[in-house]
Image (cartoon, rainbow, N blue to C red; front, side, top):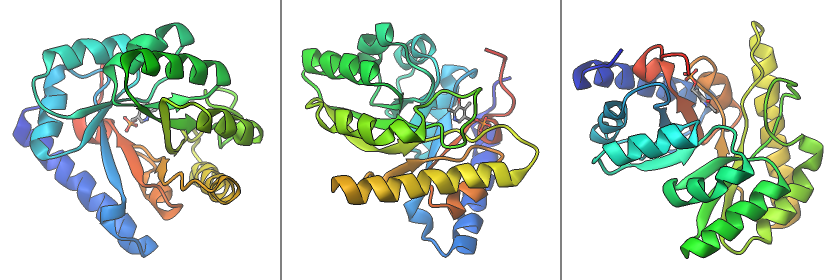
Length: 233
Ligand SMILES: *Cc1c(COP(=O)(O)O)cnc(C)c1O
């Protein structure tokens, strides 16, 4: 299903209002919370809508799909990779994405750093942690976060902006809330230990963005609420 811009705008206004309400409840300034439009499973026009609406970036979870859409899309917008990345696609990802949010291993850090060096660019990254200890999710285990961060900070061609997590799927909203609070606590601890701000906290999606904002999210990644249900990919 492909939305017209007007349909998209209504949905985006609603999501913006939800973000504003969540910020008010949490005593936060809505300008602290960015909206990443997740365009996976939708055509390149979805990214064009996001750009026209004034959003800074779109998120894709597969390298190939993102690269194809970016080629088709003439609108000026940043592209971020939010899905699991295999080391053998690190070079392609480094070349075509403006930030990689799904960095979860030392091996991947090494490959991305080398690829960025070859491209002569500095690649912004987030470290993805499995903050909800969900066996079904990618992301480094929180126990491994200090070592992963140490490795990341040693990569000269990477810039570590912060952390990302995906909450476990659950009917109990407390499960997501716990994962978000955990990511926030880990960030605060790591930032103090390493003297680096790690200011980006990418957490919260269509169904749990308010809980994520309450816990300190600075970037919610929203697909379904902006573009409707997607084709199964
Ligand atoms: C698909 C996806 C989202 C968006 O999920 P919605 O529930 O459609 O808002 C956010 N983050 C990641 C990592 C995703 O893969």
